[in-house]
Length: 324
Ligand code: SF4
Image (cartoon, rainbow, N blue to C red; front, side, top):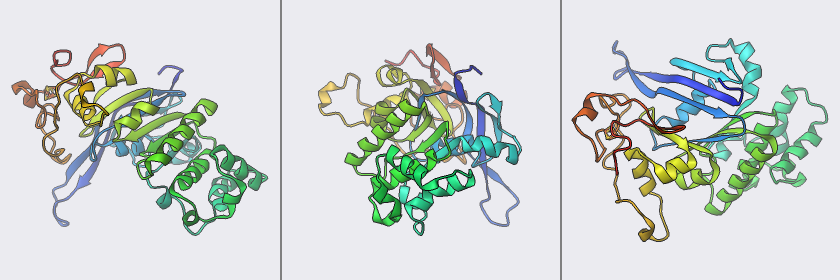
């Protein structure tokens, strides 16, 4: 693991047991995350993109050990944290925070903003709590007057700012942002993205940015990983994914981004047929073969490995570099 890498996962798997009937002895497994390997450098934003059910949120939660992994390795700051005993892990866990999609449900409605942000500070035995809360509120663009309000007395954008301030209270290094703007109005989305970007520049935060919205991802990320059925299909720098994508699934997702002038599109328009298959019963071979317009016989028989089409740009497809 290079010194620059803060987070690294190798062959990460998270399977959830599933019984068709409650008394049935037969247990099957939902393979929500199935062999994910990635790393994130200090101060970098890696976006994890995919449809609902692709496993992106489960990947984020498993990296933080909110779900215990079924297999694979997780490293944080060079330390293997996969099976680190809870007590030892607690200290490291403080440096890893998560921001959720719906800010309101992540804030206790019975607590004032002051108490919401003060809670982790009290655990850390911070002195002059009110001063520190005010500092944190100001760092996310809020003011003293917000301290005494309750979550339902402020707007959605302000609630998300409070959730960010609470995450910052413990001086984290790594933040998993799970669709942090998708519940907000478009005008507020840009403000929150700007805030996250500025905080990163100021404090050198490392972000895992989970999203289904590629237009947001282009704006905020340094690198992008495209997920499908628990696996990464393509990963690369933001320009490699947006300008030189090689995987059919990535291309189809890019086609779905609205563009002001449809003549701007250089490539043939592709459509994504059908629904994402169940992770309980994933397709054989390439997981995307049931929906891929380029699928050939080999695709249902053999799972493709990763082809490095450019430095750091990996594509999981038998025909990488051959698809026009
Ligand atoms: Fe499509 Fe085959 Fe490539 Fe999978 S391996 S993405 S099915 S062409």
